Amino acid sequence: MGLSLASSARPSARAPTKFMGEVMCRGDNPSDLCWNCTAQASTMILQLCLNSKRTVIWLDYCQLRYSDCGC
Image (cartoon, rainbow, N blue to C red; front, side, top):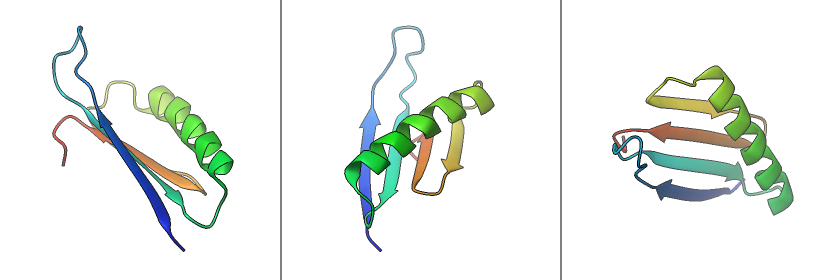
C-alpha cells in the first residue's frame, strides 16, 4: 500500500496564526476516491472540531489533519 501526501499553509486575515494542513490517501485507490474522501473529511472536521487548533480525522481511504504549530 502506498500513500499520497499533500500539505498547505496559509495565514488568514481574520486569524493571522499560521495553520498547517495535511491529507494522506491510500496509494492503492484512484485519485477521485482520494478527492472525495478529502472533501468528506474536510466537511466532517469542520462540523466536529470547529474550535480546535489541532485535530485529525481518519476515514477509510484518507486521513486529514491540521495544526496551528506544524507539529
